Length: 516
Ligand code: HEM
Ligand code: SF4
Image 1 (tube, helix red, strand yellow):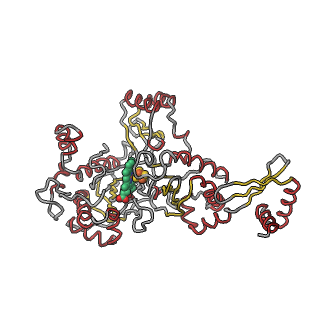
Image 2 (cartoon, rainbow, N blue to C red; image 1 turned 135 degrees about the vertical axis):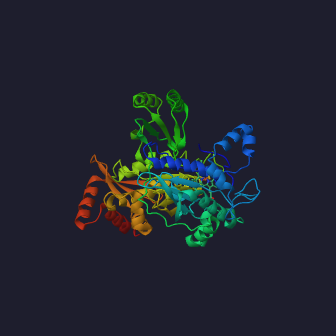
């Protein structure tokens, strides 16, 4: 039930909840219902969309009918001055919001929705019996920024507080009304809620929201650690049926694969869920259907999770070129090749093929594929050129930071290999790439690169006839210099004697000879 209603408008956008297929986890059903209710609560009330696009009133009437009456009552309630009395748009009035507004709902521990990147995050809190008690509320997240404007930045949402279940809609309206009345309208690049929260600080923001809410927030309930769940592969729904999450490379499906998907969906009347990572989940699959579904999909080239490289199946790109008018670099079309190159680099430095990390790429700094919460984010900053963001984490609870700018696509090998090599050598235990970058810090990462950049590597070609001195330029130009085998052997022996690497001794010798 994703909705394009108000898409691109300065209103609340589509509301996300986890795509979890489990029937025995009541909190997920609550999250889904609440997401729908919030979408209704904050939907623009004008029927114009339906008049223009859906040929009239029937659909509109149907939509209105199915709205939860509590939502209608909450929208109309003006006990704390949140509404424009008598307006057809009680929450938005004539002016709507300063900018787009995004809400995600989830359950404790499940960060499949990238909760902290939303203007408002809602976490369902249940008791031990699984009964709804209330909600933790976060606010002030958002990712979009502009190159060269340091007053634009990605920001993670902050905890605001807890509200009992009957107060959720009032609390949400209060946040929306606060942003409506205080969010900046003079500069669209400063208009998102995150800038208001940032400027005021959480305490002031909370106290202004409380005036519209008419109550104080209770203290934020303690939560377990967040996990990024991708919902790929086979999942036991808990009701005897299975769900099957299929990785859709950058959200695209076409040709035979599309036909096969359509076939199995129609044949078994399967509900389909789109995940926040642009993938698909087929639900309600009876065990006896599994083989047919798998073989139909396989015959059409739809790969199972196990057949994808881990880097690929965790990664995500935005539409970018040629689809998005704001793109300045490739993303959706470029990422698969970059992922493959990253894997080759990782193999080269000896990282295991099971090693993965979250890679995301966008064609401009607006951040639609959420690169700023990835372990490795590519943000287009020119044709075939990217800003590199490092230090985010798999669970999307920490922001990455901008590490380098205008790194050319063709130079990725010389750029990343020294970092991967250092990661391989210096990681702690099974430390992940994003955590490693955050722990050692950008200064160290730059040292690794500097040590390797002008490096001269000496490689034997293995057949004993000759050996090569390979000079690696920072710009990835690789120059090979052949030397006779006896020269190489002498170099090797001398390097061992002096306790130096062959590369550094060769560099030293060549520099000395050339008077450098
Ligand atoms: C193709 C045309 C698209 C355009 C022109 C576009 C435009 C934008 C802009 C201008 C921003 C920055 C907003 C700000 O900082 O205030 C943004 C952010 C974002 N967009 Fe898109 N977008 C497009 C497609 C998509 C798609 C297909 C998705 C997901 C399905 C998406 C998801 C997001 C997300 C997650 C963010 C970052 C979070 C945030 O700050 O709101 N966008 N987009
Ligand atoms: S991040 Fe991608 S989709 Fe979003 S505006 Fe930029 S190029 Fe377009």
